[in-house]
Amino acid sequence: MDLNLKDKIVVVTGAAGIRGSIGQTIVDTLANEGAVPVIVCRNARGYEYEKELQDKGIDSLFIKTDLTEMSQIETAVKKIGDKYGRIDALINNVGVNDGVGLDAPIEDFMHSLKLNLVSFYAMTKYSLPYIKKAKGNILNIGSKVALTGQGKTSGYAAAKGGVLGLTREWAVDLIMEGIRCNAIIIAESWTPAYDNWIKALDNGEEKLKSIVKKIPLENRMTTPHEIADTCLFVISEKSSHTTGQFITVDGGYIHLDRALLTEI
View (cartoon, rainbow, N blue to C red):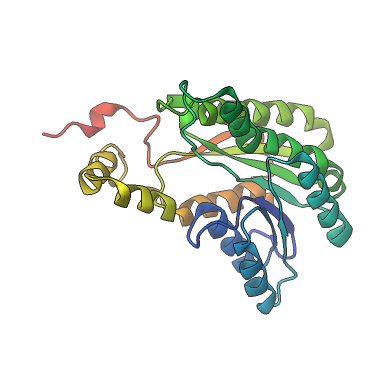
């Protein structure tokens, strides 16, 4: 299916992670569809990804940005606007499950909110004139933690709950502009960071087996490619009448009956 994303300017935050991370995979998938990915992230690895894309003939851009600093976000969006003049889609992808729980200092909680929630607001606020110009759309990357809780991660849980609230709010706020806003909710996805976490545990293999047993569809984790494919479909004109939706890509992890997991 041709998603008609060729030459579309798509901004992805937090997309200079380890190769194979969700953000980086979204960028690769966009490039394969002929879109122009713009990477906004604090990791200097983005320069490598920018060069790779440019070597393929894609007029891509990486802007090194600390997404907890609102002035840097404003500057990054201005650079995007100056170069392209429009934004066809904004994917607010940045997120770190940082383990800021009730025992953490208030300052750590506030920092978690700045990265995982306030950055979404600031990127959207500053990008909005360029999104309006293109009659583009917004996609927020959410987490199951907003719906299920996890324990010991109050900052991330609060932020991701806020992301879902903003998704519905912006869908209403921008409806008269014809601008759509949706969210993708992720549960258990096999990323390099997840792999590193499992390897760091003393009982990593046992922990991994206990997790995948709880995923109803095929007892396996969601791949970053499956998430990226869904993201591209949602931002494309093939989803032109979809807004204010929470789209869960998780193999049934959140919503399906736990009885499905009963061993006979």
